[in-house]
Length: 181
Image (cartoon, rainbow, N blue to C red):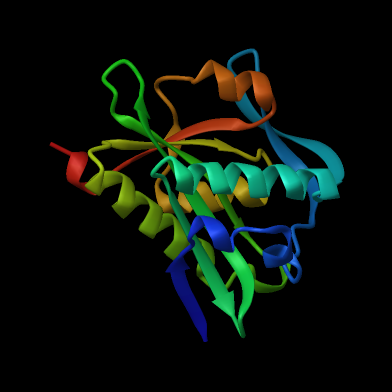
């Protein structure tokens, strides 16, 4: 049984990720070429280094410390998924909030954890006054299939900081249910 709960800043440490498997074997990715999205072969293994884990711990702690949202999924007391939303609103109308991370451990993918984390992040952002989630999303076909299934589309407002940091990511948005109309 999977349990979900918000994390406190003091819970976020390297040890939390001891049984978390980030690894993703990527074969095909979405690429925007001359303004048209297409699938291209780009095989690689995506995994986190120790430095990546340290950066993740720092960023998640900062998210909580600044009033953001970090929700974790645990199975048998082991972290198996997490999502984070930054507290600041941005965009021309200040209607976006950044879904800064959402990851599910390789051994638990396909079991609905990502969907629950995504919906909880969206509900939190909506309660904080956002109208849309902004997602700088991995371009792997499998990752994009998840976001499309959740209802994400290409964003209307690209956030340059994300584009510069991850130029191959797909920049997406998700309209929050209460924001319609």
